[in-house]
Amino acid sequence: MPPIARAPHKEEKENVLRPPLSAEPDETRWDFSARVNECDRGPLRRDSIDTVQLNIGLRCNLACHHCHVESGPKRTERLSTQDCQRLIELLSASPGVKTLDITGGAPELHEHFRDLVRSARDLDKRVIDRCNLTVFDEPGQADTPEFLAEQGVEIVASLPCYEADNVEQQRGRGVYDRSIAALLRLNALGYGRGHPERRLVLVYNPNGTNLPPDQAALQTEYKAALGERFGLTFDHLITLTNMPIKRFRHQLERDGQYARYMDLLMENFNPETLPHLMCRNMISIDYRGRLFDCDFNQAIGCPPPPPQQTIWDIDDFDSLKIHEIATASHCFGCTAGAGSSCGGRLT
Image (cartoon, rainbow, N blue to C red; front, side):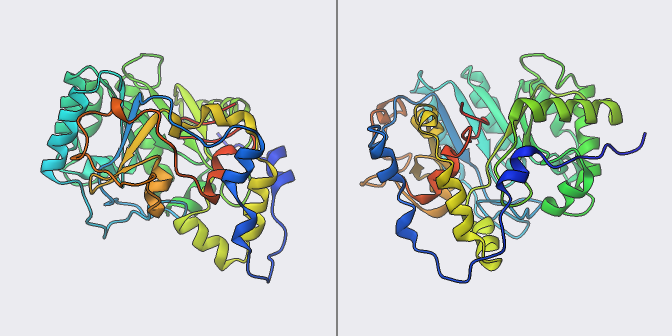
């Protein structure tokens, strides 16, 4: 059937940025901690830890424009064998942790990815694989979908639009068709059909300098478009705000839009998101085994208050609760509008 035209969402029309500024931005005007304190809700502290998010390595078969960790085919950084083993020891000693959320890079390309998944599932932990879908086409990955299904792994898959042009602007030529083929394959394995151990979640992020549209409304659009065109089904859609760090920040600065984008995020600050921020219930681990408050802090090297710790400095993850969270200007990305997290909108 013919492609479904996608009109701009209301939020996209309202939040689209105007021509670039010429002046250098004054970073001090985006003081996140001051804004939180104005709401009498600071400093932010971790409540507990129910999720461990692991960046297992930076190698990826794609090099997406919005990637906040700047992954790509030439990146070789990876979690060591010893650190993988240590992580499982800590998960075993941490009954409060219910979820291991594995990201990258393309996590599946790490040689110990499957060992980690099996070990975590043996500990009765929920496992999330943040998958780019096209990785299934890579050498040695032909049976990865079947492995994930056998282990009951939840797949959180990037598909930043249901239209091919928007996807390929962000992720590269040919990615859309390969992603659709991968999703159909996952559907055939029972993913995306309401089964609790075959959960399939799609991820949307804007193609540019605007806030995400309403998550529920966009999910309805995705389901209609992908269902009618391909017969595809999925369980849930989450919307993410593009974080003003790494590749996306470089793009904003190159286009002279960084200050305007930061102003957009700050002007849409929503204090109701603060109790639900992902950093309040998770810990992030980088490929060196270092601990961070979130994946974004990890990406820019923003550690928690000293001393900087690694997985070798602690006996379990449960002991890290009631810990002050490091913040910076990029945190406005998580608190703008309905909020944003690795699990989608916050309010």
